[in-house]
Image 1: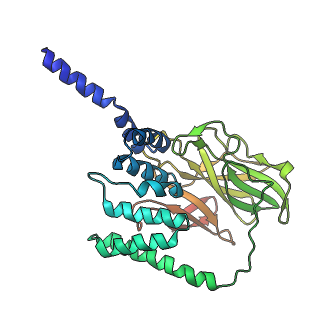
Image 2: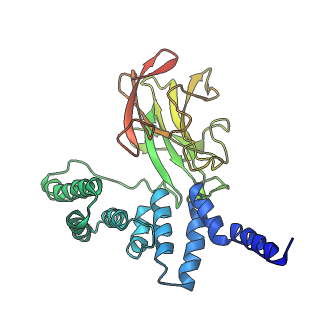
Image 3: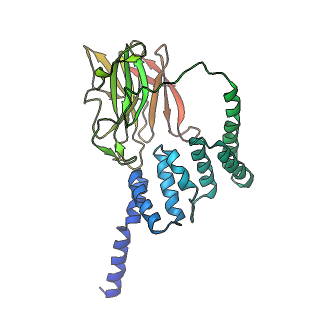
Length: 313
């Protein structure tokens, strides 16, 4: 083998192991925190690296942190990157940070300049939403929002649900393992006893280990009216390409304890099923999914409960 061939092969091997190539692989596998770390380093070396800004912004958006994406979308771009998509998501990040007038300006320019009819229609919809905020502001609110400081921690708490005088919620407070998509701990399901709107913080505890797994995200729980059947989302192990490994699981309360959860039959192998919500009569399950045949992204579906199984509607 000639020296030239050896050098070419060595170059190919070095390219295949390059840090940027690893970062792009992490992006494809949904390990967004690694992508953010790499490209922030690239920006420190070259503050005008528009491609780096783009992948940081996208990583924040795809890991549900679009607020943090704003400053990066503002400088994002590069060869092969859709300028229209960047503008659209930049406007969405501005909206997330309550910068509605700035978002309006970006969307109006996008609607006027883009040749992509789908993005033009999306820009119009977003503008309609911003315009509707003025009408909402004129309506009187009969609700008061209070921070449950006794329950909340510096970590994530979300998706609260009441059932049989107990509050169930999702939190990342106690998990030592880190989810590579967000750089934060995996989430688990917790419960606490309540008396009306008052939560007994001394009773807060995680659900059993066969429901909460240390290297899996659990969250968004719902119950049948009698509180005897629990359905929750479970997934995001990071073991599969991308992150479509979110499914719905069912557990029943028998003899004073929850049963081993089992996946329900509406799950699809290459789709994301999450955020379940049960109707008041316990006969209809609502959930979100990005399965084929929808309108795009995550759509809302319903399914009928029938005895031990869930039948897709």
